[in-house]
Length: 338
Image (tube, rainbow, N blue to C red; front, side, top):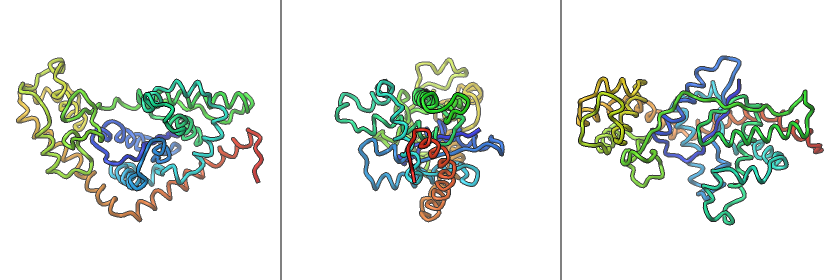
């Protein structure tokens, strides 16, 4: 098994990122046997499909690497790198654009969402970035890709491109590309804003009080939890009692995810109590969980040399795995190289 997954280096990782995706990455890494491997990459080349600040992109790439390591990604057990150091990603994308079809890309819902009404003003990179996503996984003969609901369509496109390429340029008994299967991780917690239980926790929210950032210290975490929006009623004894109480549901969900419990188990302990008792307990649990992560994060961010070395080593390992597939793709297309 070879698992590949990437994340855009936007910086400011928050609790929702950790509980929603990164913790599952760490579990995948820890659960794999010695004959399998994980490749995790920082999708800095994807980031240029939208307007961006170059200095912020560099900073975000290093901060994201630090955050992933602080959360438990072990660069001695997994391959951690950024795309820009593995040019084979971009090369394979170009080779695959001859196979991908305009109609396929036009149907991508994220293209429609991100381009909005001004499609003529959107970058070519935004339109074609699903082909780069396909290259990201096909380059490594990936067997499994962790996917959530919003990424299923992209994995299907990667499989379509791989299948068409194999049909067009390979023999039936010797396909070039492995068709990656979805890896469905354990149900990830859906973490909502601390200010509005109907919206996902997001770094783009103008209010810093809406989210717990992984770099927050203990005092900041406790302050944000105590000021989190709730309601005047006591917690119910059963989950059904949280219906139409989005902020209460969110806080219970966070506690359950951090404690490794079900919402039912949390309510069995705190049912009948008000938020004056529940919030301090949640804050303490959050501090206990995040304190070692934030401490390690700050340590790593302050050591640029160590981060550069980790990413360089990961990129070298990624290139080793990428070169054979890229060479075979050139050959299959009849392209002559020196």
